[in-house]
Image 1 (cartoon, rainbow, N blue to C red):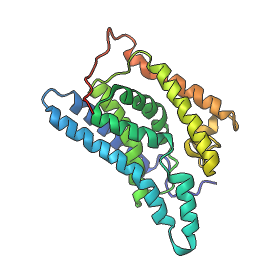
Image 2 (image 1 turned 120 degrees about the vertical axis):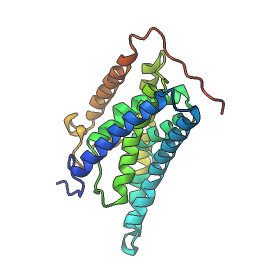
Image 3 (image 1 turned 90 degrees about the vertical axis):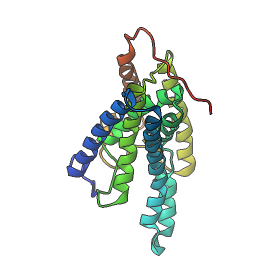
Image 4 (image 1 turned 30 degrees about the vertical axis):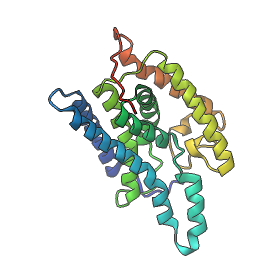
Length: 248
């Protein structure tokens, strides 16, 4: 039975969803604006990148602090290893988009767009979050899971760094790479990052994808269908808009 303090689609959840929507519109308009200097745009994007990195970094720290009491030291270490390392897809895409926000790299933006909107948005809508808004975990979770779609939309529809030919194949390839690597790490760590080895303990969309392990096939079918849908806004463009990538 679900014993979480956090209630899906309660006031705290709706507040986070509305804040994400408002921030998305704001960042798209900022990056599109011809009245805002490039320096201001880059500063705003860099701040968002920093927030994503901080949110990812806070997960193991907050897990350790919550369970570090003398009688729970071993438990704290195990929970950090099994649940708080940056191996979930939402963690990986947060770091990918942080790089994209700072460097404006097209390939990084492209993968952030697919993984962020096809993957992290699902976590935003059906959070595997146990704590409500009187805890730092709540804010870290929604800064990350809300910041990812904000960043993806700002870069693609604001800055105009669009998917390029071959984007679907690249997204499928890197998704399989992620699944293979993290599945293997889960076996070594006795963990369940990416929910690839079994379903989450709380109610999510995975519950509608069939029994284990066949839900992984449904998961891929859903993800790749969403990748295709995410390409539809660019299907009738006469030519992609190319945004210069700064040298590193």
